[in-house]
Image (cartoon, rainbow, N blue to C red):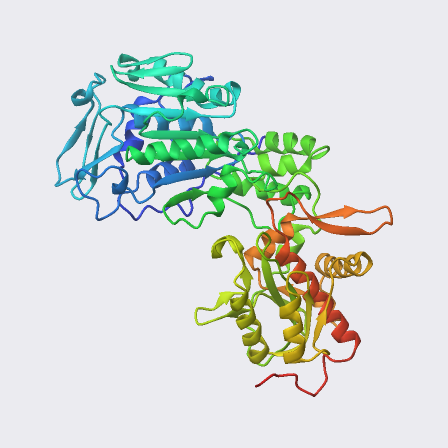
Length: 549
């Protein structure tokens, strides 16, 4: 008996105003595009309905006449595994923008109706608004672009769109072609691929960008995506992107959207706990059940069979496509699931005896300080009045690490905690490290060069071993390794690869030039410092290293 994905709407609670008329319009105008049920009424899956109502979520302060500004989200990103129905659902959103009530039209007093007959559609459908509900009308001249990397890729959305039009009431005023669809007399839906970039720069109300996990600088689609978003913004329109999980080594448009600090982007990316290993069949079944929830048409047994076969040659691809996880194509240095399993956040009190690891950069890579207690709990300390984490991305500071802030943070940590040892990698920071040696003592501040292959290999192996083995308790502090679950540390560890050398040793490297691993290196240094402190008998020493000027 085949196992179906759970059709659960758990967590999908709509407690905000939205254009409910849009999903109702979709189900009345967009029939099932193909298959055994072709032409029948379409019913949105729970996840599709959730993403639809969020994209059309209206600000409580919206006023009549506002276009993009009436909506809570400027654009949306939907990351879902294969076979969940992203393509057909994307087609329904494009058609809603083309002919449906996708423009905010004020607040209902109660009793108002949206009638298709008032907007050129003779299907006879209507929708009754409740009091206080946001109302919608169609765009007067809809100009839409549907984008993908290739003709085959764009067909995943455009083919169901064509069939929905042909099989439903929209055929009265939408005329579909191979490369564009005419909407009434003046509107149109254009297909844009890497071989049809001449359409860029045209004014648009809406852009649907499919598989943005494949949009990179190399294939010039990053520029396409950015140009479209600028064009939509100029017309007070919006955009949406859909994708499978991306390879984080490629620095794609999808990755940049996911990592953006902008709060006006709706993001939907269901993920299973990172403690579940995709390489374990039992865990993989749990992962599939979570990420395919709300897609009851999916047969999890078929998904497992396909994933297991791909796992034989390309496990990262299987994990991205079916596990909905953003993992790089080559094997990592440290198993992310094992790292995640060690996350047990707790508070570290002032004057606690700790060690520190410091990895610095100047203009490109990041600068980070990680700390570890004597019982093997590693964490990212905070500094300043706002408790900022001791991790600095130079892009956040005009392209250069704020050295004065880093020095102030180090001074604050030395005063707050009983720091037994600091391992600091000197390149780019020789002057600061010399200053710390003078201030805090050469026995506490050690210049620890990560370029030493033998020593760095051993330090990386020490942390890796203590992460992947089970915590056994007892007297071994390293065996009890835990950490704070810092998301930046997790990301940098996921980015870290081990490059083998003929000597049998390895060095740590980035999965790609765009990725960073500096927090991972600081973690290695902190853990190595702890191991050396324990070996030297300083962990239980009664003398305090607490610094006070």
